[in-house]
Length: 113
Image (cartoon, rainbow, N blue to C red):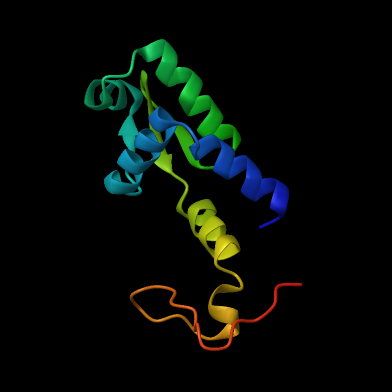
């Protein structure tokens, strides 16, 4: 992932409504959720939701698929994983992270260049 793509994804997620939508879509999995159900579950007015979904879609964080009269939105897991990899690329100073997360060694801090 390029820095500009990471910035676009982080910017899209940097709003409470968009973050809530994305988290809902992650929980829903690849099947996604209809826009009307997202609005209902999160109590977001449809006009506001449309704007937020457009921002998430533009950043590549969600996909939109027409299903009859509904639009089904789903989290774009590949973009999410790319963003996580970008953010943790040099985690732990090159030491493999544990399954429970990143825990950098504190006994020999490395200087960041």
